[in-house]
Length: 309
Ligand SMILES: NC(=O)c1ccc[n+]([C@@H]2O[C@H](COP(=O)([O-])OP(=O)(O)OC[C@H]3O[C@@H](n4cnc5c(N)ncnc54)[C@H](OP(=O)(O)O)[C@@H]3O)[C@@H](O)[C@H]2O)c1
Image (tube, rainbow, N blue to C red; front, side, top):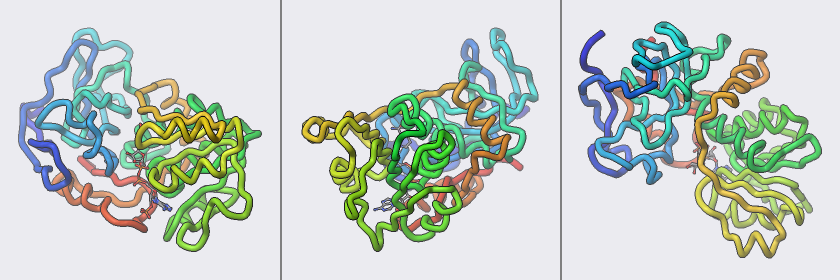
């Protein structure tokens, strides 16, 4: 193994323009950590706007990965060199847009056998966010009518599928190519926001999962039944508005959870959870990968850095 690696890093806070490819020392392993040879890393366009990304500089983005265990710290238990693993990396730690990353063994899950590394890397952050929003926060069940705002985005593709997997009735807002994608994911009703308004036609929902924010978030209060639940991902919702609507409104930040990743792996291995990849880039193209998040009507799904084939 080399003593250095290539890593995508930002030396100061900012947007994609701050990202550059550096050659740096391999990560030093702390207690209970393993060194993972990264095969693929998925990115979240908004992560460069999150305070959690900038707790230290230089910062390596990309907090979800798929790879192979390359080395163990002395007290790393339950994992072996050569294991295929994936996971969500805590935001205060270095990201995985690099050839190697140090990860606590407690946050490592087995890679789903049916998926490629690129598909697997697209799961942890987005699918865990969807899982935790639907089940840990909103306690969605088959009796619920669920609206997923932004069902063609990184989180939205999983929120639609996971809500369907428990038998809920799922409506989703999408636009452009998202319309066809949401159909293929099995949504019961698809609202193309270029031509339709989700607040019309007397629609009512027990649960709204909001991945868009702005007007989509504010207008969601109009369509949730009294006693319903709203989960939003961008920031704390307006609690006065929630109280006036009789709605429980929650913002949370996704956290690693290996039990939940194992359940996602099982769904993926049974062919019951599809991964949608918008586009792939090499590690060298990391800045371009983040730049591809600009604009609207983008390709549905997750954007992935292929670090090694
Ligand atoms: N709290 C947490 O732990 C957590 C975790 C993950 C993500 N997040 C946040 O959740 C949000 C979504 O993340 P993501 O990775 O899923 O983002 P993403 O991949 O950019 O997805 C957003 C989706 O919403 C769609 N959209 C936006 N405005 C729309 C509209 N008016 N009508 C229909 N569709 C619309 C986008 O389509 P277009 O391409 O057409 O715009 C895109 O498909 C971000 O703000 C992110 O910061 C939070």
